[in-house]
Amino acid sequence: RKEREAAERALPAQTRDGHVIEIAANVNRPDQVAAALADGAEGVGLMRTEFLFLERDHAPDEEEQFEVYQGMLEALGGRPLIVRTLDIGGDKQVPHLNLPHEENPFLGVRGARLLLRRPDLLEPQLRALYRAAKSGHPLSIMFPMITSLKEVITLRAICERIRAELDAPSVALGIMVEVPAVAALADRLAEHVDFFSIGTNDLTQYVLAIDRQHPELAAEADSLHPAVLRLIQQTVNGAALHQRWVGVCGGLAGDPFGAALLVGLGVSELSMSPRDVAAVKARLRSSSQSSLVDLAARALDCDSAEAVRALEGELA
Ligand code: PEP
Ligand code: MG
Image (tube, rainbow, N blue to C red; front, top):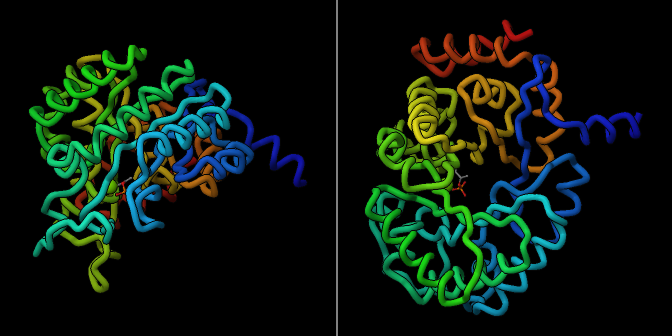
């Protein structure tokens, strides 16, 4: 039985009608890659680089980061790696960075907002990434907590300067869709990014105005809420205007029913905790893309997360 399970995990997430979805893992360290691949992941769709800064008392320098990214690419052996630049602020605090106290950190200087104010953090990370890209392995860079086109244009310009300085190859540059403004303006932003990766954890908290860690309310921050699904649909539609792909790396991607809905909405890559890979693949392999498109249409027409969840029973 174990052997059969392992063989099934290794199969692609191909729907009954032949549509293939890319299944990647959310991973933090090179030593987690082998296990993620054994669990059936086809690459890394989100490397959270915060861990490099969190479990220590000083920031890692360019050289140390280069070795981590390079090690990760080697462990992946030619499979894709998407590295997210440092996403500090909000729920992720790093004492040794001595950042000013904020009354409302989820609405404050976090993610890309911090990086744009702190070239001492952004530039060594980008240099390490472009140096790793010279290995020829497939590497993409993604920016967290983007809110505006201006941020994207500024970050792209910094990347291009660093790429040229290092004589490195160009790297696909994507953005996280976590702020509702970005989903709503996806048609305008798409021209300026190579891909979108939807962070449903933060997107849900910002759409519903519920702190994702709130002891009383967090359970109500349900990513199946139709308001969240409509913004995902808007992102997919905006991206399609410019032939950009859309992935999801938030928690909804690792929920088999959520994953089925996301595929129905037109998402083409799902990145999740390695332990969720097998169940998500099995769910998608037993569905047809056309039935998932119908499912998604019905979900978009619901008026609550509960009503969307109730559609699960109808899924073949
Ligand atoms: C998200 O917000 O959905 C996401 C993937 O980022 P994180 O959970 O690291 O904030
Ligand atoms: Mg997030």
